[in-house]
Image 1 (cartoon, rainbow, N blue to C red):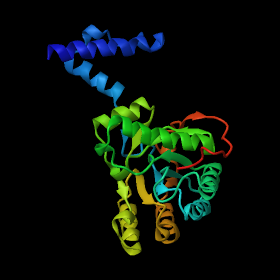
Image 2: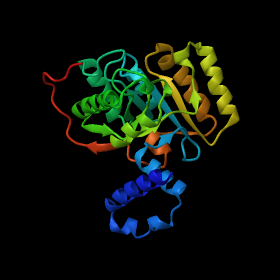
Image 3: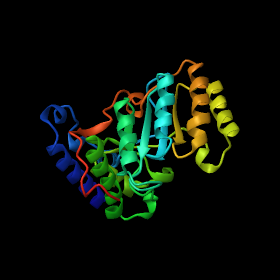
Amino acid sequence: MFTSRIFAFSLLATLASALPANITARAPDLGDLTEDEALSLVERATLATVYSKCTTPNTVAITFDDGPYTWNTDIVNTLKQYNAKGTFFVNGNNYECIYSTANEQRLKTAYQAGHQIASHTWAHLDWTTLSKDKLKSEMTKTDTALTKILGVKPAFVRPPYGNYNNASREVAAANGQSIVIWDFDSGDSVGKTVQQSETEYQNVANKKPSTILALNHETYETTAKQVLPYALKTLKAKGYKFVTVAECLGGKNPYLTKTTAGKRDSTWKC
């Protein structure tokens, strides 16, 4: 215990030294902290934040995983009909290579329409089975692709299968990203029929929670062309506003960096 206390205070001191003076001036003296408080602060500083719910009342964040894929633009067009914004958690090389000319255009169309583009990491691998170095590669390869194609590095990342642990939270934190899960699942990826997914949306609409963070997958035609229109119509009737994940979390910045998109060259490949 004594060793962990020394380590925690040492790490806190290092972290504090890197903070602006106006912040450290408002912080308690390290000596005033108990061991548990010190360890808690270290954990908060070194583990990525995990969001599973929105915080802005009366908002719905509709999210789509596993693309970019064939029905991405259909989804964008449907969202436009309802004045809705969505969030796309994209892979680098899952169903298709992110660098294909078709996927480049899909991403640009969604991004330019005001939708949020976030990371689902490169090959849809379970984070909890990966070494830290391998997970870092899965994250940075996707970030690099999105920087080349759109000129942005996402501030948010979603773990495939929703699986994460403290080791993967450390890697995400070191990469500057927060983790996003969900509190509602349409069930499309586990074989639910259109009718079953629509029933799920109707049930959650009837319960009228303050917020909804909904999981869908853009890789299913039925999700894009049948379930999504139903969900938007049903939730709109309950008075919800459809926003991006960053907006539903109180207006956070969706991107860590923004720069000029790159031009296609020989490195645009999976």
